[in-house]
Each structure stands twice: as structure tokens, then as C-alpha cells.
Image (cartoon, rainbow, N blue to C red; front, top):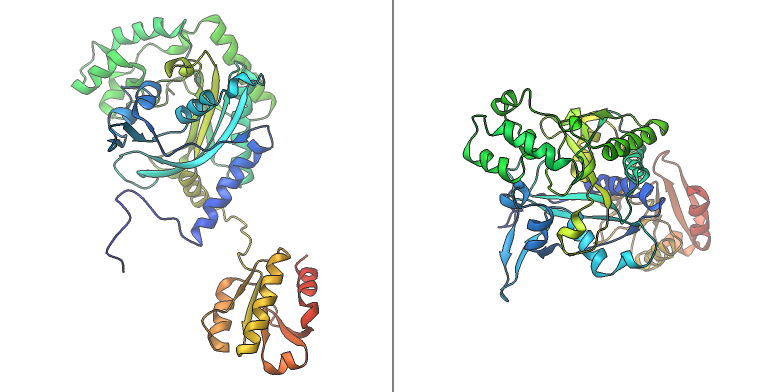
Length: 420
């Protein structure tokens, strides 16, 4: 037992569970790779101002949950609490928007950090796969991203998730709504923190999960009643495209999401099997974010899906992923000569693309066969002095228990034939 433990609110991903996480990442990214999205990776930390400006000073993420620190050189940095601001910063820095091919479509996968109260499904270090389409204002892009996330979840065998959809308006109609909402909220009995939020970002008050606040919000002005004609038409097109693609969604006029940069389309993927942490992912359009961080006007849309949350959703639905065995063949040498020869065979099998492992540590037959069993290998190759003298090895089928001698120089071909 080590003296050290993983920091509070974090987890280690270890086999065999880690295979499930890899499969989820693969399934979420597959539809993206198939739709023109290129892979991007950004640093785990950024200038703290990127998030305070982009995500928003008043958000819980920036005001309470960000890991911010000062370096020895005096730089103020923060561990990334979300992916969009970093990806947009990287795209602007590399001038990807100037290559003439808009939208710039990018996908990413990585760890994010928020100082939260740890609970099931909510950690201080968590893993996401995300996608961003930068530089085009087109309802078809919003629809495309929602459809691709839906496709990813369905490919994993999930069926009990719901898609919530809303429009947050734009800088034409949202200020009018904001004023009406502030007028309504100022008359309520709210705590100091929430009162401050009314002045900075009143939409976030609607998102307050506390019952006593929600009771007071009955009769609050609704954003959809304030949408301008352009935003209404845009939202209608997103809905029509989703309907045509057969993707089911629910209109949720209270959906605001916890980041300041969203405009127009916002959406969330929720799973009812996860209790209070029901969101497995979400996203939306963020047309003004590029200007907020000092770039040109680049209307964009994106989402991030939680890998840990998706794994919990699979468990809640009882979905078992069909994961390939990590090892197909396990070699068990009996004696020094066999050790040398079979190690060569294992190397040859691996070069031929066969997942092979070896009984290390000089165990006897019984112990080595136990290891072979635990490895999940379909076949075991066993060889002793006598086998080698006859130029052959014993090939055992671990499912049927059947064992046959095979010529040493034909073993790779025979295994490839059987596995295909």
C-alpha cells in the first residue's frame, strides 16, 4: 500500500474498467472523424483571463470552481475547466480561420478540472470528448452536431437519454429579455450571491436548482416570448432538420447552461438513470466568443460529452460493451530453450498483428496456465524440450479445451487462420 492516494475528487482509470472508457471515447469520436472533424489537442492549463473573459466572471465555473495559480515567473494560469475556449484560442492562434475553408471543424478529448464538491458522476478531474465547428452561422451545423452526438450514444447501445433544446436569442433580442427578467427578479426574496447574479447574468438565476428559488420563479418572463424573428426562424430550421433526421428532442425553455458565451441554439443530453447529475453532455452556439477573447467575428457551435457520465449511463441501462479481449494468444514456455524460442514466436505474432502475451517470471505450468486463463486469451501455446526436439508446439483452444500439436514454423499462420 503506497503512502499516497489520488487527490480528493479524482480517480485513476485502471484495467479492465479503462477499456470501457477507451471504447466510449472511440464511439463518441467515430462519427466526428467521419464528418470532417480534425483532431486538436491543447495544453492542460491556459491564461486565467481566457476563461474569466470567455466562460464568464459570474459563472460558478470561474468564480468558485477554477483551479487558478501563479507560476514562478508571475504568470496567472488556470487548469482548463472546459474545452471550447482553449480550442478557439488555438484555432485563432494558428489562423485556421484564414485558410478559407470555413467552418473549421475540430474534435478533442482530454481531462478537465473543476473544484467541486465530489459526488457520484461529479469529479474534480473528469474526461470529455468535444467537437467545435468554428466560423459559420448555419442551422445545419447546429443540427449536424446534435445528430452526431445522438449517433454516438446510440452506437454504444444507449437508448434512455433525452435531448433538451432551447434558443437563447442573440445580441438583438436577448438584452430586451434580460431587462424584463431583471425587473422580475429584483422583486424576489433572494440571497446576496443570487442578487449579484441578477445584475451580471440573470439567466443563470433560472438555472438555480434550489426549490425555494424555483417556487419564486413561477411566472417569470420566458425567453421564447422575446425572441426576434431572425432567432425564431433560425431555431425553427434547427428543429426541422432534427425532425427530418428522425432525432427526438424536447423543447425546454428553461435550459440556459452554465456558460456565458452561448447564443441561440443550446442543448443538453440528459440521462434519467443518473439521479441529480443527469446531464451526460451538452453544448450550443457561441457566436460572440471569438470577439470576447480578442479574435474576429467567428460564429461557432460545439458540444462536449462526459466520458465518465456516459460510462455511468451505460451501467444504469445495464449495457455491456462488446470489448475485444486484450490478449488472443498466451505463450507458456517450459524450460530455458522453450523460453528463448517462444519469446521469438510471441514477437513474430505481434508483428503479424496478433495480440500476444508471455508467461514472464519463470512460473511452472500450473501457475502459467492460471495467468493464461486470466488474460482472456483464446489460445495458449505450450512448449517443452520434447516438443522443440520434434519441431513443434502444443496449441490449446481455451474455450473447448482441445489441444493439438502444430509445427513451430507454421504456428503464426495457423493462429491467424483460426482467429480470422
